Structures are given as C-alpha cells and as structure tokens.
Image 1 (cartoon, helix red, strand yellow):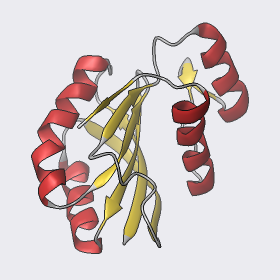
Image 2 (spheres, rainbow, N blue to C red):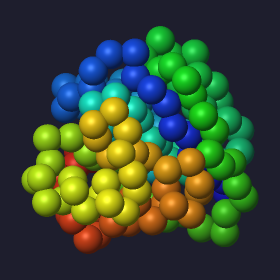
Image 3 (cartoon, helix red, strand yellow):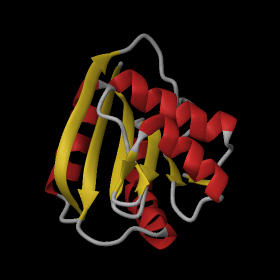
Image 4 (cartoon, rainbow, N blue to C red):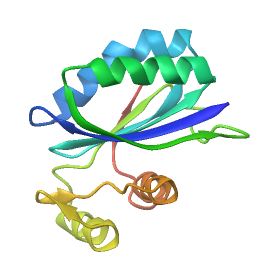
Length: 145
C-alpha cells in the first residue's frame, strides 16, 4: 500500500463548484482502482493525499500532472504505508476558503499564510497534521465521494 501527497497551484480561482467537479470526475476511477484520500483546496492551491496500490496511485498522479487545472505541482511524499488513514473516504474534498475568521486565523498562525489564505505545508507529517486539524479539530464541512 502507498500514500502520495502533492501540492499544486490552480490555474483559476477555486470554489466549491470546482472542488465538487473534481470529485465527481474522479469518483468512478477512484472506486475502480480502490483509491482513497482527501483533497484540500484554498482559493489558489490544492493539497491532495492519494492512498492505494502502487500502480493505481502512480497512474492517478500521472493523470493529475497532465490535468490543465493544475500548475506548479510539488510532490511532497510517495511512501510505503502499513494501512490507510482515509480508508472510509473514496475521496473527501474540503474547502479551506470562506472560513470562520477565527479558524482561518488559527490555521494561518499554525501553518503560515500564502496569497491571503492558509498555506499548505511541504512536509508529509505537517500535511497530515493539517488534515487532522481541519477534519477533527475544526470539523470543516466537506464533500465525500
């Protein structure tokens, strides 16, 4: 089992419609390939975690790299894992935009600021910690497939 984490810049502004469109486009392929994970989005950037078999995760990432929606893709981690963190999520999308100002301030204080929004980290452990904070501590609403 493998986990891949990447960060990218969006070529356009991101909102809930963009996030939902991405999740709908990948839903069938992720289910067929047993890919699980999470997609975080600010107004300008994506941070995504993909979990599954090596070939499937690699093939999915290669499709993302070729997708014209993404620019400046940065591979954060591609690791062998004992078990999935996101086994119950086909793919969950979380919009880290239009937040409660107090939550946004706390996330910026902890992880930094980028282009007026929360900065996604470039270290694996920190990216996973941020996802945990967003999902468990702040309980931001998401969209699951």
